[in-house]
Image (cartoon, rainbow, N blue to C red; front, side):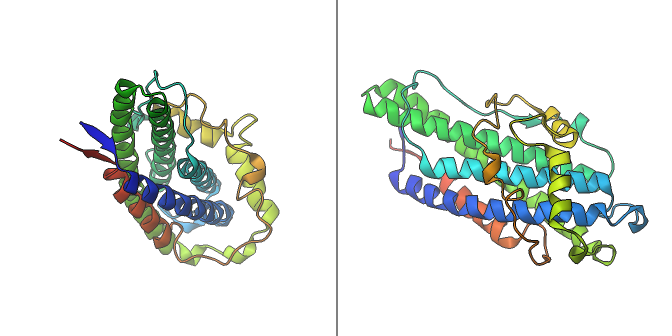
Length: 275
């Protein structure tokens, strides 16, 4: 017999709220860096963070950070649901055959793709938690027990994606540091940032940008058939940005990675065996 730990659930909800804030902050940094990198030009050398294509890839990573921030906020809020006769489990994965061959595009593509996969895991986790609550409220113990197993699967899946993103973040930060001599953070305008972002991603309610479409095409078996339903462009941290922040030492900072690590700890212990 297994059950959801009330203590770990509350801790996960608090950690998810923190992760939502950290994700939006990271989205801003990645969004601005896209324009900085796009302006560096091909003269920066092979493997450097430079060029329009790499800048667009960073914009997609920025969108991904906002997407999972939205899912973290949903995890922090989760109400009960009545459709507990259904089960949602995320088995999303990356099709490596559709990842670009050249670096750093390959790493950035993987980072954005695993953000999408994490979003899918978090969506399925939230739905499973809400269905569990609905089943308990209706005194349907069989359905509640089945939802517990879905919660276990989705929580472990999300924690695993956190690990992958942390590894990819380290690689992104390394190439960011190596490319500093070619980059001028203070040379970009807010208008340029938002134009590149919209070109690469597109507003969620409209046609998606080709770079974002390419990332989505490489992710298969999503449980969430409509990833962007709950996104409100008015809440997009890049599109609502009022000024360019100070230049960062890292694109994906330690605060963000540590916040995801803390949430992973609670997710891995979310379901406990009572036998």
